[in-house]
Length: 507
Image (cartoon, rainbow, N blue to C red):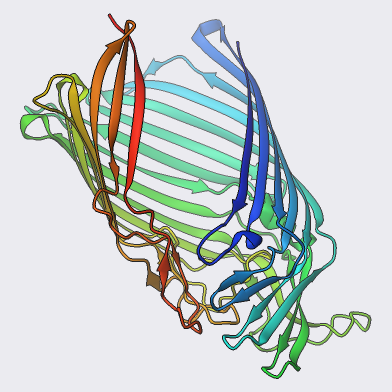
């Protein structure tokens, strides 16, 4: 019988502070979470192992702006107070039942496992938004957005899942994993079936070689915050000419659920890897990953850009409807990666590793359309924010000619992360994430001394992070109308670090 409890408290004052975001625009974030669980295992007749468990998780989050002043977005950064003041709560209860059946022989050896689980998940929010304004480079107001309606909303969902898995060893050098999983939830109202297969083969050769591969059809869990948006507030935007007169508006944007049934997002995942020992105990590994996503959830505007509809009702206050964002299955994702790894383990706990990865991550729904993001994109197709086509990582831990001394290093180089260019209205110019930060490079070098003190073993380490002082910016002025357009900020520079580790009692 296993019983456990976990409580977590988190506090992050002035979140979002940066070169373009002064203290007044930051948010104080607080969160607390607790998790309790119980699980038991029992042997049944005929060597059947039965397992059951229950877990409960509760999460509370708070986002507090520094004041209630209007949030101002200018070509040279943000001013005022952030416009979202939110309280969020989430809950999850899960019951699991698993059966481990006795192994049996049939064209090899089989070990079957099957199980079932039922979950209840819930999300509730109380969000109060003020509004924000965007300004031209000459200081004139371009548009003002405020929010109407109640930000109180809640949504719950029941989820069911069943699976069966076969651990099939055809021969000592060949292992096959076969599985089938089914998922159902209350919001989607349909069963989704997901087969998967994996294998590992190690032929008997002079130098060990291992081949692994697999395919899995997987489905995303239903994200409740996507389904709560139609219950949330509406945004109302007024557009102004340079002379201060109203050009258009007030224009309303709202979210809605489709009338027909949604499909569950699905992903096809392929993986192949080859691993072999090389000279002097060096292990090399090459792997390939391919992932394709279909029927992903994303909100799309059903109205044509620049073609607002008539007022909603005669009592709508003269609002025009400029956007009806409806939840659809139109998201498509693609990810490919090829990796090469060299690794050597030396005696005494020393060793080194080198890894290179080429990858590609694309989507037709890069930006998440929601009320709390002022950015507007007409074409939402491009690389994902974490896309890095080329990346190199290496580390090493080596002995030195001096007794009880060691040297350690960590090296990382990668192509810079992508970002979008916007105009002073907050609209993306050109393709989403069409530009990139400068290439990232960091070399950390440390010396370590092992010693004994009061029958305990210790390690004292000192060294420098970013030894070369390479400029690795984290923030960019991406407003094309700003005189500081494409100015980068935020590199941490070189830093000196000290660390002490306890390695255990002396023998």
